[in-house]
Length: 427
Image (tube, rainbow, N blue to C red):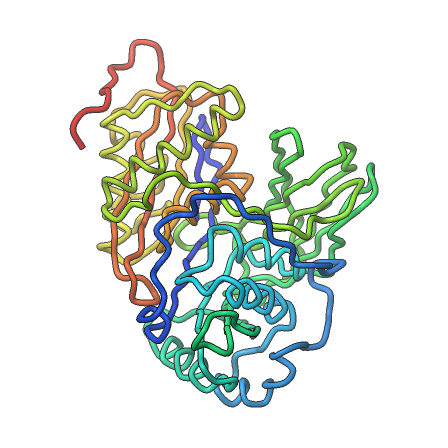
C-alpha cells in the first residue's frame, strides 16, 4: 500500500499488502469465498500487553520449532508472528474456508503484539498432525524470485471439518525496523515514545502519522541518530483507539514500516467483526475499480461526506500508473519511467488545488480496501472532505502465491475554479 499527497509540497507515505492463499489440497475440497454476507464476531482471547515484547515460542511453533528451522534455515522464527498465526489457525479450524476474511490477519498481528503492517499468509488443512506439507509449500515459496521476507511464524489448530484433522497458518513479514516495546494500552494523557532500529539500510525521512479517535490525523517527524529513529506522540488526551503509522521513503517512494493500534483509557479489543458484503467479490479489473468506488463512498456516507465523483482523466492517470507498476515490475509512487506523483500529476494537465494518491496490492479487493482504511495516511485521503473527484485504476498480474493480484492506484483531487472536468463515461 502506498500514499502520496500533493498540495504545494510533497508528503509521501506507503506500504505493501499481500493476500492469502489456500494450497491446492484444500482448494479441491473447500469452495472459495465469494463474499462475506453476514457479520460474525470472533473472540481471540487475551492478547499481548505490548508491541515488540520479547517472548518465547508457544503452541505448535514451540512443538515443531526445530523441524521448522530445518525447513527454512536462516529465516528467524518470530514468537509474535507465531502467536498471530496460531490465532488465524484457530479461526481457520473453526470455519475451514478457502481464505481468511479481510482484516483478520491484521487484527491478529495487533493482538499478538506485532507492529508489522501486514503479512503474507499461507493456509493449509491436512488430514495429518504433521507440518511436513506446510514445510514443502514454504520451501517452494522461498525459492521464488522476489522473496524478501525476513521473519516468519506458524500456528496450528484442530479442524472441525470432516476429513481434515489440522488447520495450519504461516505468516511471513519483511521487517525493515525493530521497535523497542510499546504498550498496547495507556492511560489518558500519557505520551508514547517510539524507538525504531533499522534492520538494514536506513530509509529517508522517517515520520509518524497519528490517527486520533475522532478521525483527525497529525504528522510528526522522527529524529535519526546512529541508525535509530525516535519520535514521541505527545499527550494522548482523548479516550479511544489511536493508530500510529511509522513511514519512511525508499527507492520507489514512501513505505509503511510499522502500524500500531493503541487503546487510550481502556483495554485493547480482543474481538474481530467480519465485514458485511452484499455482492460477489469482483474478478475483472473494471469491476474491481467500480467496487472500490462503492466501498469508498459507503465509508464517506457513514461520516456524512459527499460521495467522490469519478473523473475519466483522473481514472486514466490511475490506470496508467497501475499498468506501469505491473509492466516495470515495481511498486511505489516513484516510477523509474514516469517520475513521482507530483511529476505525473502535473504532466496530466489536471489543475488542482490539492491532490493525493493511494496505492495498494492484494489478491483480494476487500483486503485492498480494508488495508487502506487501516492506514491513517490512506484513510485520510479516502475520507477527506476536501477531495471531490477521484480516479481509480486497477491492473492485474500473477502474485507471489500464483493467484491473480490486483495492483490499485487511487488519485484524489480538488479542482481549481474553471478546471475542465471529464465526468465518468464508458470504462
